[in-house]
Amino acid sequence: MASPEIDALTQALARLPGLGPRSARRAVLHLLQKRETALAPLLRALESVNERMVQCAICGNIDTIDPCGICADPRRDGRALCVVEDVADLWALEKSRLFPGRFHVLGGRLSALEGVRPEDLAIAPLVQRVAQGGIDEVVLAMNATLEGQTTAHYIAERLEAYPVRLTQLAHGVPIGGELDYLDEGTLAQALRARRPID
Amino acid sequence: MASPEIDALTQALARLPGLGPRSARRAVLHLLQKRETALAPLLRALESVNERMVQCAICGNIDTIDPCGICADPRRDGRALCVVEDVADLWALEKSRLFPGRFHVLGGRLSALEGVRPEDLAIAPLVQRVAQGGIDEVVLAMNATLEGQTTAHYIAERLEAYPVRLTQLAHGVPIGGELDYLDEGTLAQALRARRPID
Ligand SMILES: [Zn+2]
Ligand SMILES: [Zn+2]
Image 1 (cartoon, rainbow over the protein chains, first blue to last red):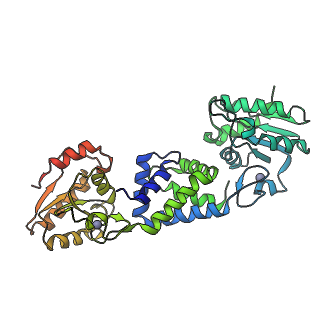
Image 2: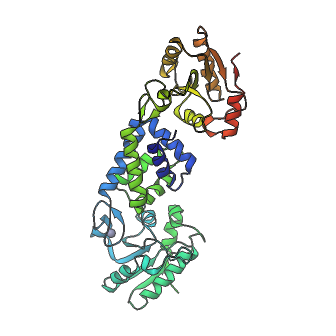
Image 3: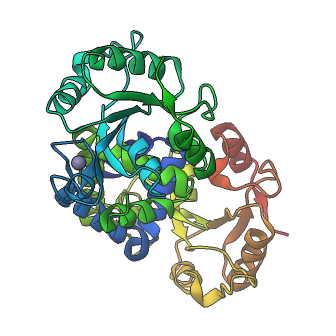
């Protein structure tokens, strides 16, 4: 039924990764048929996320506080910094507390194809964090894709002048694989066997 | 990252048909990273649907008005009534204006397995609509599943006493198939070739 309200909701859902137009339509029907048990909780959860979640001004993580819980936690090892492409990767690493240090979220990867340039990513703030001192090791935990590795090499060059050890995840990460899809075991192994960047 | 807000949103999304826990997590990240272009439109669309969409007291359709646009439309043929399991099926039929009459949404199908009994469906209101007169034909457009057909036969018995022609969709509907997943051509053919219930 073409009601503009339904259409708008269907389109908004269809744009989510993992949902096409057809499954979005079924999702809308499900929401309409389960007003109290599906639509209301989703609406409340979205409102709450919209109102409460903010991006950390230091690392780019998303949390209810700024600085985020990781940046604010004095037990985290401030000398180790793990650079990731996006928040999904930070969460994948953080889920099992694999990394004792802090993070830096780039907000993407360099891509000639998609026109993503260094100034489109949080690379300058990263250089600034490193330049301020106190950091011994920077783990470049980019995805093992061509673009991820290009980004890692670009950042390695930008940080070359600073007295920090640059490392990358061990090749346990499958070629072409995205961190966010890895099981914890592989991720833990790749992190444990991390090695200096050549 | 375990923030209760994120968890609640992930869970609410994971309960949608077509989204599992992993894709719900990616959807949440997408929403967080595209606050203006993804989260805000979805939130507005959900709010609007929640505020404006109501169930039609006559037929069970969902629309911004009650009675719904179909029940209120004087150009619809009030003598033909198409009974469907749920709103999804009504929309599937209505999308291409296949049926000139009005509808009746049962809100499900009889199921011994799931404990769905006649009184759990809008069967009594259907009998009442038919008993009020003015209806010549009732199309029992249930899904071609065992439960759908059981429901159709049960309704046929309940309507037996009334002077209406009972028809069902032609077997162009694949066995085990759900109306909502059919292409319009098959659906149109099945409706055109509808035949009296034995
Ligand atoms: Zn932070
Ligand atoms: Zn109606």
